[in-house]
Image (cartoon, rainbow, N blue to C red):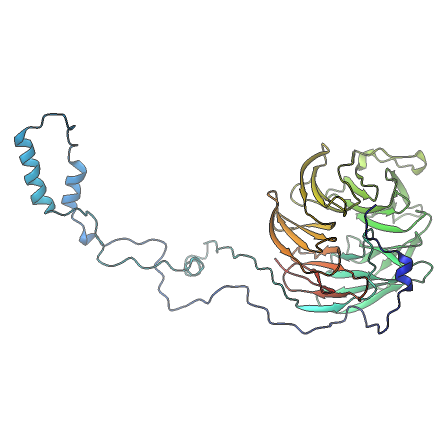
Length: 463
């Protein structure tokens, strides 16, 4: 079991002396430096990409002589006195004791900035790629009270319509990243709550909400209407959710994983039983053919759609791979966007490793000890990079270059575990949320695509 979980009962009993509205701006926007470095001087003369010397300063006759002069004989070979006298006389007349062949009348100009040269050259020229900057200050700060500090839950998700959903206690809030507006979707009663997971459907309109009571609700966010409630699927809280088109996969503390077809009345279509403890991580591959599941039993399973039974009563479905290399709970899962059979996983506080798997063969390709609890993983959609968020003991976010796993950036100074991350639809922004056991956490967005929690703030940075 991964250390550091906080009981839900203690969350309910905690009193808030002066509650503030959630997801409201709590700070002013600071000055942000421009992305471009340096100013362009339009009056500066552009010399192009090469310098051609002045040929009027060249002595072509002398150059031809030096190029065609026969090699000197070996030191021990006999040389005719008349030949030697002829060579000496010819050299004095042609070279006039000069040794340089080419000469510049003027000093070559200093090269201009590459980007400036590209701007003045043909429009077909490829501009120079600017180096990314990762800022350390927040652009916007939003309050998020009552965010449950539980490693095994999944309380943050970003939909395809650019709306961020976050569960705070018994309530789900929606924050529109385009307009900055906030709305309340649902608030459940104490018998059902708190909310233990949220996950957007691929259409960006419908959202699944997992509850502590073991039920799962499906909501239409365009009309704020409850469409249906899935009951009897699990016997304990539903802490992980994953969509595969119209199939909603649910993972529970009872160790079961169930595929639910939300279009039909009898929604339970497949059941996967391989975990003996809570299922805290679920992710479908990009192709929708493989499902990765991680549990508090330190196990990672890879399930193949072709091996799933269509009859839940038939018993356990056979996993494709059962991997037990991690030494703690496996919550962080991320399928690689540029290599379909590559999966990254992260272990809890007793493991602290990021591992890479070939899901076709089940082979572990690499393992990196991060030094702290791995809470979440996200691949960069635009670069070959991986972003990880961490808990005990450093509480940092780390950007890794893949496959070398060299650290490109490390953001430290957090006061609590960075439990949840979500990526924007365009892949240019990442939101993360962290919690603190004594003070109310605040949810904040930073410019530049990383979002971290610092001093009880949640930040978004860009890359």
